[in-house]
Length: 79
Image (cartoon, rainbow, N blue to C red; front, side, top):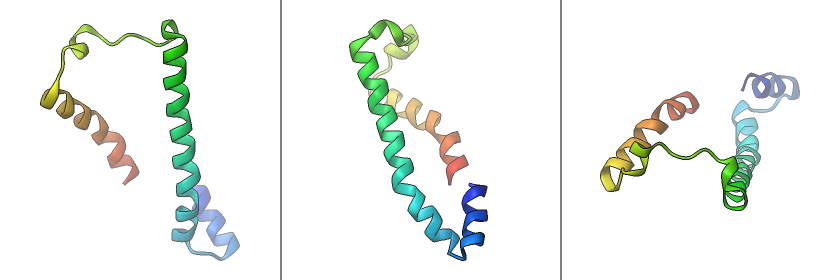
C-alpha cells in the first residue's frame, strides 16, 4: 500500500518492516471476515446467494482447477 511506503519514509523505518508488521493484522481481519460469512451462511442461509447449478456439479480435479483459475487474478495483484 502506498500509505505504508509514505509512513515508512516519515518514520525512517524499512518499508519491508512496515509490510511485515501489517501482514498479521491483515490476515487476521481477512480470516475473521471469512468466519463471519461462514457464520451468517449457517445461521441465516436465506441471506447467502445460492450457487449456480453448473457450479454445484463440479467435483474433484475440475473443481480444484476452477478454484485455482479463479484465484489467479487476485493473487497476481497481491504478489
